[in-house]
Structure formats: structure tokens, C-alpha cells
Length: 395
Image 1 (cartoon, rainbow, N blue to C red):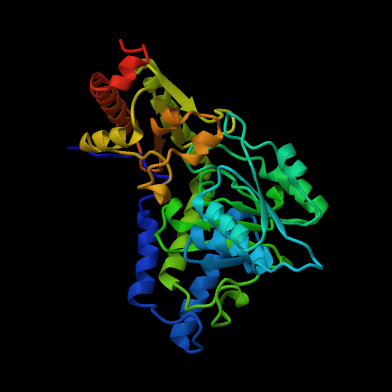
Image 2: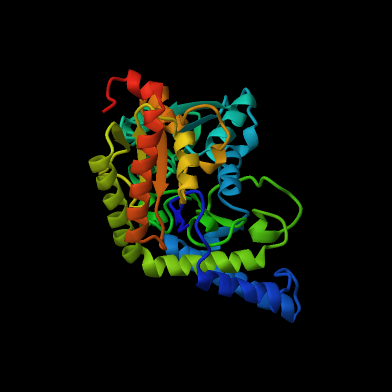
């Protein structure tokens, strides 16, 4: 059976060039980057080269890039670090954080934890297309607001958020702005100066690098308390021996992404649009979720009336097509997607959704194979579904 991988928002395959760059620092140049001898300095040079590569991809200065274990750690460092730990006092008043109702769990759960420690939070809802109104964010600001955190690209529906507009408001009010750009970096142009962000999270395994390594951009002068303590690594921001092979791989992936960004985006968007058009033509009772005009090029989120997304995912896997119902970090949850319900979808429609996310190694043949499998699986499951018949739309 030929297999088609359409879950690139969950993780991407490691690019051959990236794997090759990484192997050298697993085999030969294995030194600790904090050691002063020859082995250590070879590793240090590689780490600093990777830092420069990541910085170039996002338009930052290398000294403002620190390495982490991935997007979740970078998000946690931003939320807890910028909120000043969570300390409050009668003299300063209760701190306030603004986020959106469609953030990744790494941000949402962090903000909810802040609330248990006495920090107030506002969750701004998106419009029906999954895009947040920057005016709503602006109206949520209070004198005690210390942080605004808004993702750049949504991981489930792919909608691009107006971070640059929010950045202008944040700068005017002197509020720290963080963006979770894990799903955006390497897929769309990202520039920290154009966005006006103080903190930006990214992860290697979303742009053809390995799992377990990421980065956080921290604008010079941004107050950020460390999550962990134990050493002077990463400019006192993040203690612990550097993951040199992973960092080298992230740098190589960032350089490759910069070279291929335009080419990848155009080709992948064409594949996504081809599958979307095919589904709408050959499958009835379908709704495409997310604002088509403000969407990253690789993501397609579709609701199938009368069906359960989990059943579709399992049936498609048996047909050789890998996809998901949403965030891999929410896998196993019985609740419908918080992103789709925040956009106004009913619980039934949200539970009947699929996320199909494309990558650099997908082809037109993959689209055609996936389309045939989707049409076949949907027809078979609907023939067995009382929900679909009851909806009055069964053929």
C-alpha cells in the first residue's frame, strides 16, 4: 500500500540535508559547547552558527535568539517569564494578560495556570473565519496588562492572525507582545521587526528539523524571568547543557527554509487548493473552516456533516492516508476542538472536522490518492451513520 502523509502541522519529516548536518555532531564533534578546550569550542562555533541561521530566517539579531527544547518550552518561558513569575502585591495591583481563545494548549494552559496564581486573563474570541480582531485586543487592554500573547498562524485551521497590527498597539501602550509562531516559521515570511513582537516561539520539527529543539526570540531589553535555574547557558535565560546536534539541525532547517520559502509556499498552496476543490466537488455536506484570504498555504480544515473526525482519521489511516482532527497535543481529548467552537461551529460540526496539512515532500499524486480515499471513506461511513440520514441530506 502506498502511503500519503498529510499531517505536517503535527510534525514534518527531517530533511536529508538537516539529518546530514546533525550527524556530524553526534559522531565526531561531540563536545560540550560550554567547555573551553578544542572539542568544546568546535561545538560552540556550531551553536553560534545555528543561532545566526535562525536569526536570519526571522529577521532578528543572533544575540536575541536562545535555544530551547521546543515550542512548548518557548511558549511557557514567554508567558510565565513576561508575567514576572506571577507575583502580585497590593501596591502594584493584580497583573493582567491578554490572549485568544484559539491558542495552542502550550499558551492556553500556561495562562490558565497564571489565573490560579492570581493573575487576571482575557481570552479574545475570533470571528467566524478564525481571525482575531485587533480592535478587540486593544479594547481588552487595562492599566495592569503586562503581556499580550497571540499566535501568528493557527495550528488547526491555518488562519494568520493580525500580529503586526496588535504589535503597534502593544508598543504604544508599553506592553510585552509574544507570538507563538511555531506553525508559521518556514511556511510564511516572518520578520520580528515587521511584526513588532518582543517574544517569538518556534520549533524545529515543524520545519523539517528534529523533535526536541526550538528557539525563542527575546527582543533586547525585554524583561523575562527564567523558568529554570542552574547555570549561565543561553545568556542566563535557559540553563542546561546545549543540545548541540539538535541546535545544529535547527540551524540547517532554518537556512533551508529561507532558501525554499517562496517555492514551497506556492507549490504547497496549489496542492492544498487542488484537494479542497476536489473534496467540494466530489463530497457533499462539506464545510471548509477558516478564512481563505488569511490562511497559511499548507493547511486545510474541513467539516463533514454527520460524521466523527476520529472515525474518519482511523478509516483513512487504513486506506494509507495520515491526517488528524486537530492539534496532536490534544490527541485523546473527548472534547471538540476549542478552536472550531470558538469560531462558532457547533460541537457536532467541530467533532466532524479533519485537518489536512501539506509539506515540502507532498505531490499531486498524493492529492489524488487522498481525494479518492476521502470520497470512498466518507461514502462508506455515511452509509452507516444515522446522524447523516437524520440530517436530511443523505443522497
